[in-house]
Length: 183
Image 1 (cartoon, rainbow, N blue to C red):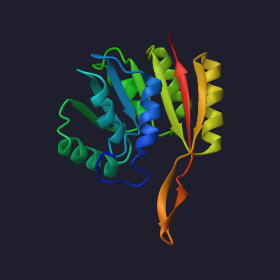
Image 2: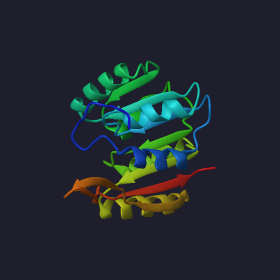
Image 3: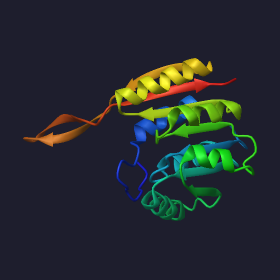
């Protein structure tokens, strides 16, 4: 497990990051955006999977930007463009990104608009992590309407914990991983 500073709502659990990034299937030299980056844990792990990965990380929370900045520094991840703001605004305004190949969405504000913009930009693969059922339904509906829905997974992780000299499993909150393909 990577060591990162924390922020409310994060970091994303390493097992969830592993499954999410496997669904993106990152390639060397591509562009990756991390929307709702929180602690930056997903971007840090993504940087290990593909060489020369251009990373753009966004979050609307100033606290998250501060924490991600420190985590990127601690992990010597220098080639990241970190942006503070709501993703649908940044995606519309930021014109120097060029082609976006892969998108991870951990924050779900304005999810429909964000997905529309990502489709307009012809992002190859999109992975959304959600914990609320309503967000899952909105995301699947939007992806189906946009013609990019591929699959949804419900992932539950439990960790061993000591109890009376033995071991029990304590469940983490389950996460839904919604995958979109625009290939």
